[in-house]
Image 1 (cartoon, rainbow, N blue to C red):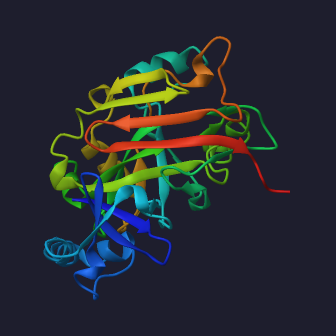
Image 2 (tube, rainbow, N blue to C red):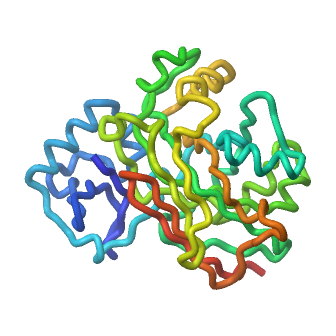
Length: 288
């Protein structure tokens, strides 16, 4: 299933995306929760209830609704740096390398919708894009072996790990440069794991104003999904709705010579094979 949080102008609720329509599953079962995170907390029983409700629920044209981020308020939102072989090589030239998994936090207030604008900060002009595949945790778990790791994944979605490069260097782990408001667009929906049997072989592409900047495949990942989850769950408990974004292939703006940072008015589009696309326009930071 492709699970989406949507708003039709009256209320926000869960839908199942099928083609160019969204199935309003709550119209088929009023007992269902209003958001995907609450649904994940119900486990497989909740997902099965959605499947049943979708068979006779109302349908709405996707063009008539607004899609929100699939998980608007995760407990954890983390990213993996330098995880694609091609990206490692381009960043090695910038003196940024690591011999182990390099995870960083993105503050959850950066979460943004799949088609919402991203802000060019007042504090920097070094705004960059990173097209990535993210996975979402579906069950509480600790000390998960890499062989069992996929059993804790609820599904997959697209993420733009928007980065402010000069601020990324201001704090260990890059946390400040990764956490500006609006700098975590995700979506357009959560595709459940049963529909993504081979996440380690998906094409991923990023365009800026129609120019292809990133053209990679998850088969370039240095670490497997099992290795990622084993590493993370060694340290802390994984919880439903946690978002982990798995890194970016080569072609980020920072790696060009000279760098090609984003400017106001530009549009970033990211596609991952089988998962749809997200698209975000850069606007001035409206805060005062």
